[in-house]
Image (tube, rainbow, N blue to C red):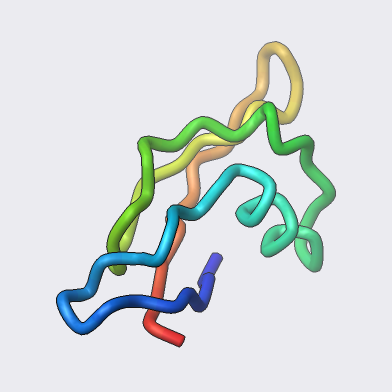
Length: 69
């Protein structure tokens, strides 16, 4: 999933990308709960690995790509 965000000249985000933002970006493909998404803190642009628990026994891996807005 690709998420545009406002960044400083050094490439750091103004804030961070939350699980709620990621869940909203995934909405066209699938409806997921924000609390079921596991990802390290995202504070810069780039690609980040994430996992979403779809069911207690089923999870899916995906990439969160943060780009400058």
